[in-house]
Length: 63
Image 1 (cartoon, rainbow, N blue to C red):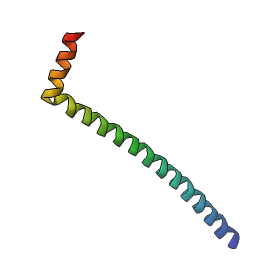
Image 2 (cartoon, rainbow, N blue to C red; image 1 turned 90 degrees about the horizontal axis):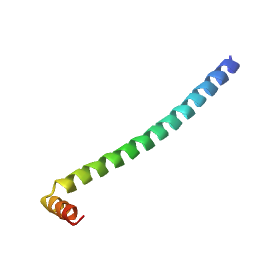
Image 3 (cartoon, helix red, strand yellow; image 1 turned 90 degrees about the vertical axis):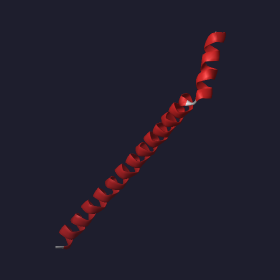
Image 4 (cartoon, rainbow, N blue to C red; image 1 turned 135 degrees about the vertical axis):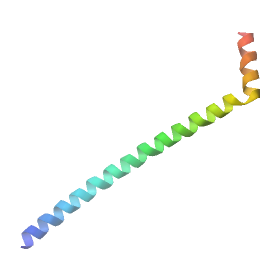
């Protein structure tokens, strides 16, 4: 009986360790995508400002 309990405990422990590892990696990936999403949103906001459009047009005329 003790052997099966130890085996079950060992299995649960291994499962929890793997689950924690996957959860940690998933949270890192989610954080990376959140950073990228925020950066793209910020760039879109800056491009939509009138001053940015005027500056961009002036740079185009100089080129």
